[in-house]
Length: 339
Image 1 (cartoon, one colour):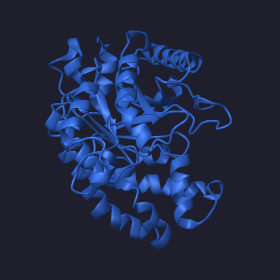
Image 2 (image 1 turned 135 degrees about the horizontal axis):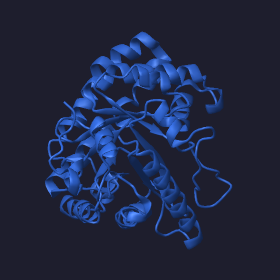
Image 3 (image 1 turned 120 degrees about the vertical axis):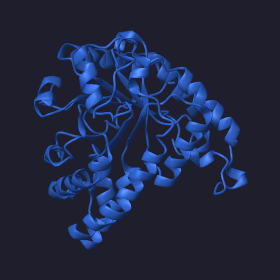
Image 4 (image 1 turned 180 degrees about the horizontal axis):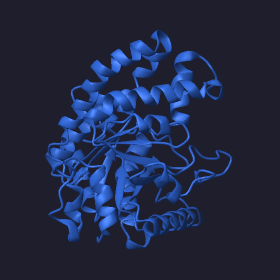
């Protein structure tokens, strides 16, 4: 993988001094509305935009001193971007939130009124798009998605903007939280990584879920009747997915608890996985939503300064085994992260 000097510089801006990406994600829009709705009892569409904006601002201001970067959306997150710590880089989401449930395949689309160049003008160091992808979907669906990613990769290359592709595994006919999908998730994640490491897409960093559903992995809290993978088997699957990657990749938390995500990073480290960091969202700040709704903004700030910081530090502790993003970039092997 060869990167331009401009992309190298911008990737360094979202990494720490070791070249590890220890980033905070709060680009959620519909997911954040749903969290507010669940706590407040309001329909998601009735959740005021101002609440989401203020929540993102508090998360950015209080937690980015402990992160190498923050991922935000340009719809509700630009004011939060301006409140991030001085040394924290910025990734901006380019995709529209959600998908049309009346159309099979969870087809992606981009935000209206935005381009890579405009996102850069808003301060983005790097561009991120989310793609629901299943190797088990029809050739027609996957061809559409592959062409879509290829066009974004070309646009990012023309703008010299690093391209982060977030791959979310799913199956059109399965519940992603169920045992059936847990059995095929390792193959889904691994095959998706293999596909989007191909040069035609011009992806610079992959953002992926861990290759096993942690709810079905042997642990002190998993009932024996619910174990699909022993700890040893899970580590083998972590390593298999890692070895399929020729690009730097980082893990997303997929909405699991802080403790569960920390356990996943522990398994990755034990397996010798060459991951380059995380873009962790809800595992860090999710429980702050109920604090904000029920007790107000000052209580949210107090919670973030104590439990939020504790959560992000817990994730950061799991990055000791992470590898620099430039390890897989031949022209920049000696390139450090930011100061």
